[in-house]
Length: 111
Length: 113
Image (cartoon, rainbow over all chains, first blue to last red; front, top):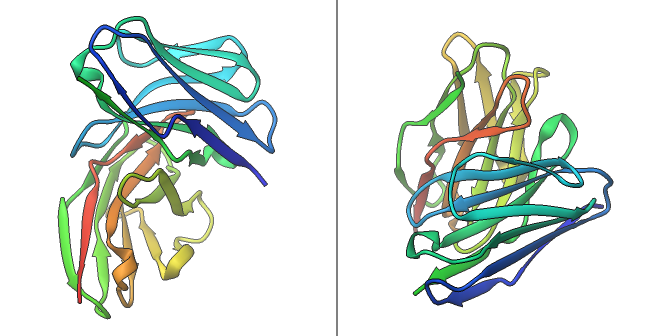
């Protein structure tokens, strides 16, 4: 069966520091991968998606970037965090008929 | 363009009573529709999905939803609420010819003892 992992689970970072969040999927090949952000009390905002290694589509202009160095690895990065980057970051992979399955999330607090 | 509207931001029910969470969608074609549940500080868990098969879809934990094309609705129901159902629920529609999902703003379900 398929499993999706995210780490770290929680992260507290100062403004201006770099960021790297990792997502890995097990049990499937060549999945579509997604990064979402969920701000406090708000819905889900799609940030990036990828249909293959090195293929990244950005949905929202911002100081975040994403990379897919391996088939089942998806990384969300920033060179300099802003206060507004705080939120709950969710990774998802796309299955049959594009049902998306979500990871456990990373809670990011930028101070 | 596709969109999803969850009509209630909060719903409160007593344990053992029925649950109704409302979702309306806008889509040019026959859509794929999903309901997800999110418990505090957790990821989203798929409850059920409609992908142009039977209009009444049964999901996990006793939830079901009915696709009504004439009403452009996909409401989520459960006959009897449990305390463990207290969570946030998201309705989503798959965009036509795209990999993307469009999510509603969520409905927080409170279950009173």
